[in-house]
Image 1 (cartoon, one colour):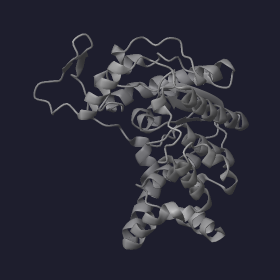
Image 2: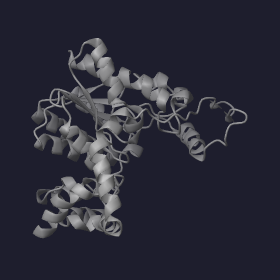
Image 3: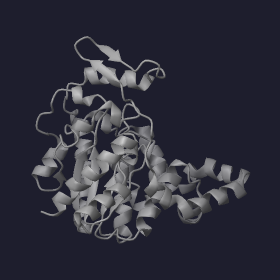
Length: 346
């Protein structure tokens, strides 16, 4: 077990495929830890919706325009949720980082259950590099199902278990892997920082809630199936609160992250990411309630107003049912930066 930890928990991590799930989160972590200006800066966490919609480069340009000294860093990792963000933030704390603010995304002010899946085993490989033997009890218990708990325990105790396929690919084409790793080290940070966003757009999409009619520009490609499914979800969405178990799970991870922020001397801020290309048609949200609102009321975190970005929930700012495109990224990034800087200036 000790040999496994030395080889796969330390040495081999330098050679993990950069395009893999583990490679992606390691690249984000390394890029953030090595960047200048992290101490006193702003770390923004989220999943692919933040990765596509938020540009640290544009946020920094806005901060410079306003005369602010803080720099922004995008720590978003595709396919993740608050549990992953917590452990990544813990890694930053243990590396001695002291940001001015830590910013977490939320899917809705009511913390809808779709944002929180306690048994999402897809997060386990992502967290493997950051798990320690001391997590052998707490990490598995953050899952509900016995099978998920057993898989989580394996990830804590046996680092190499989740890297078997990666090692096999490495041995199949070692030269190609070494070249990919070297390219990632040299240009990975630059690629993340300069990414302009997806140029595709849903501009021209329309929906009439009264008739159920969907409009799509003549001559355009067929309406994506995920957009049809999104419209079905939108019609069924009543803004109901999360079930008690999901709310409890959300409260635990946001509260745990808030405690890390206190230890790092950082403000914790939560914002609601623009939800979809037609959400401007949804019924107006009531005052936020649920775990995030409770933590904000207790002073554990600060929440950006839930309606701050509702006007961006339009087709021209999205390229699919949940991800903002280049145009959305260009508008959203400086606006989020202004909201964060306004809180830091208080």
